[in-house]
Length: 193
Image 1 (cartoon, rainbow, N blue to C red):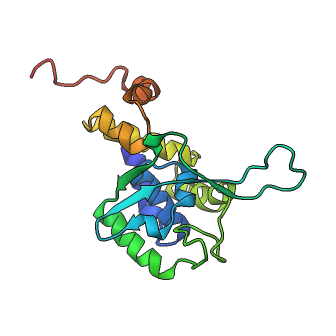
Image 2 (tube, helix red, strand yellow):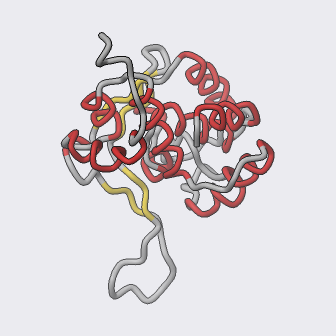
């Protein structure tokens, strides 16, 4: 999504489960599964930070004959274990959300009404996609919000290594490889300077 589209999406994000999930995704670039695994104990609302320490999966393991069940996994690389900065307007939203969010044994920031983990397809069907329709935008997925975060940050002048760290990439060349095509044809005033 472009910066204009992101603003339109944020304008329709309510102060509920999905509005807060989408807003946090936009402002941190965290992966969908990382946000679904985020626990209140990893969020410091006073400092405006959140630690990404795990992700949530609903996969069925090889050999299992029955339905999927949720599992928490550590990040694939050490760089995936990271501290994210949360802007003040999102901290404010999260403070309100913490008071009314479902309480559960897992202490999840984003959970079902029973406090248990929610499935990613549910957050799309009941959360992101209705918000996109309300904003009059095309349908994208949560990973597109991650791409929007990175693209907007790089286009606004953030150093690639800083964006790579926030995304949990262990090497900034990964970030460059993924996002280079977004900058083809973009001209800056650097030669003039």
